[in-house]
Length: 242
Image (tube, rainbow, N blue to C red; front, side):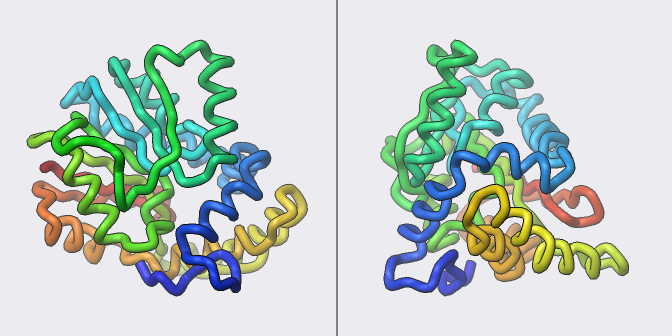
């Protein structure tokens, strides 16, 4: 991931800017996610989580957990003993904690402020690690993937859901127009932060998707890597085993 692609033009690090961006949009994040994707993001999450059905992980780490939607879906489908969510945005975690309390899931799901590139866990801790729409925001993508590998148990599986770049006509043209022009305008109306949704398109374009990403995973040490495109290549599921 190109570290120069940042949400704002400021002297702060990318990590600091991403945290501030998500703090700014945390109150409308869930609504806009579902609205802007026409609800398809919910289907994508379910498909990604089902990649873990056969391994039946009991202790899961959800990196860049945001407001917790990926973890909540994991609880429904996988029924693990424990999920820990980490995120650099306190604003997003505040929403997640409220949702955990409302759903009475505090005995299964907990969240904490944390950095993907320096996870505060011992080596070989988790049966599985999940990330939904978070890896493209890492300041140092290789470092983040390496630390996730460190805390994953041998034989454990990582599942990453991320936006991708469609290649086929006319999906590619429509996608680019929507992301560049329509999405930032709608985002500005509801979240009051147009730049956050302009950054979304810029970060997706800069992200090394497809085979480039699985090659990076393999360089770090992940085995049996797979790449599965979803909805004409708009997003993708990546998996790998330690």
